[in-house]
Image 1: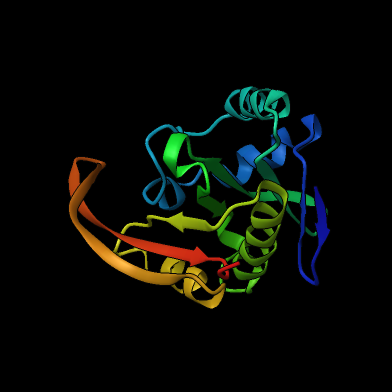
Image 2: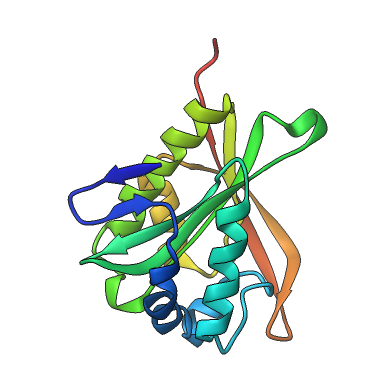
Length: 173
């Protein structure tokens, strides 16, 4: 997949992205709002291993967010299984120098449209931490609707946190 937006490109990961990925991913403020499988500190070796892993995945569901010619973040979706196979969970991160520029919203809209069409999905959902207001705004601006608050549903950095459940639901056939 490759989608060119006015302020970013969504594309497949490439080995050459490892250095800039590590530079932007090695940020505690980003780590605090992601799952624990996202390492901190984040090294170039982590980036190299991640890129190798996602390049081998089929179908491709994890993409680079390129801004100004460099890997500035990532976005992907996890296809669900069994009776939930018409759904996917979406997640994303963006390097701090690129926050507040509308990049996340545009990228999320593009990947949502791609995932729905390419995989025949009826629903994409996200579960940001409830206190991650910028991510909640990105979801809302991209057309996701708040479905509820999952109280005391997660732990990050030793702190129990609430999560919000947002979903983008496609039209009825």
